[in-house]
Image (cartoon, rainbow, N blue to C red; front, side):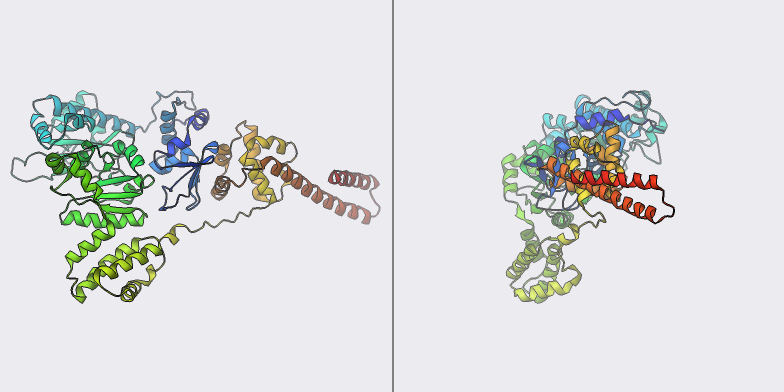
Length: 595
């Protein structure tokens, strides 16, 4: 069992981490007052409803109600465990990891396979790069890549490499470096059927980096046909590994993310070479899916930064199908898509080689809006001068309209179909509505449904929420009020959590949220504080609330005493001393209520 990271380390990481800086790596944020706003990375939206409140170390989306602290944000975005998130944040903020047993960062948990695999891939990448650039064995591969127009500077930047034709070389080499056969068998670098045989051989190697710039996988391009004359796949790609999920990774995203944020757009390319060509031409907001069709997770990697996605896929049948599928996915995520039509070459690398940067830049500037691209493609695919052809073309375009998220967009596109194919608007609208009545509802309605909650805000709860907005004011509350003074069980629970954090000398908004065992209460607190409802006149609100809670508690105690006094007076014989005590206690409460 792995050691637990110490509470002191977790607290130190929380104090040292700038949540705005961390979230900005995933979402484009703009400051308004003391909060930062952007489009939510957890659901599709055009209007920003995702907020970051740095003084509370808090993020919250008013659309989908996702919220929490910076550690939870990293866990959700990277799909990792709590300890892994703490380690990432500790590295960013320069905090030394300490463990509960007093061990320091050098302590290795039992299951550190992920870290070891990343280290292995980094070292193997370095070896492949050396073989490409510094050895006679890699000379042919280097000549090929230079003939494609790539510079040595680009080759160095992307750490391109060469895997030797000898398929047993890598295993021997890594054994010499003291790697065990058991570890190498699960590395993904070797054939599952023949564990001594390398998965990649005689290929131009493309290291695949994660968003943090760590090598986590490889892609390999075939340089020549097999000796037997049989063709192996042109490209081989690493399968999914502990450290790598190809459907959740974009090639060159680590190089492109700053430009994507700045330009507010991204180019999705067909493959490695296309992507690298764009980068060499200074168009550094290009990325590529990894040997698979574009996925929702890959779009989510960029959606927090971009206003539009540019698609640069091949012009063949497979490329056109990939373009159409990508357009629908972009629109389902409420992102405008445009299609780059390359002029003068089959791919960006060829255009770069023949015509240079200016030609690629011009193609980007002339990108076609997705709706125009689809209508033009459908007009070429079907005989739209006939009724049957018009029907088929319209049906083909209706799936695009389904993906749009507002009724205005849908209506505008129905008019566009009417004008393009010369059909009456009434006929187009009728056929679209009758096609699938279940799709009449706007997509956005499914996203913004409100979360049902049984928590009802009352005066007691409002007072405690005001305290949560400024936890330094809790001291004046605890001097006046105890748990038993609360009638509402939710408020009583929240007060107990505040008191517990106060007694542990760790009274912060984040600590209180972390102590909440009830997820609905946790999300309720996060959402309410993020709304900024208790930012102004907080101290007076708390004072008024304390007075109200005290008075309600005293009134309840007085009512209980009156019942006991009446009961004593009905008793025979009366307990005079007990009756005097109860009356004196009631008079004391009356005096306090008059103050």
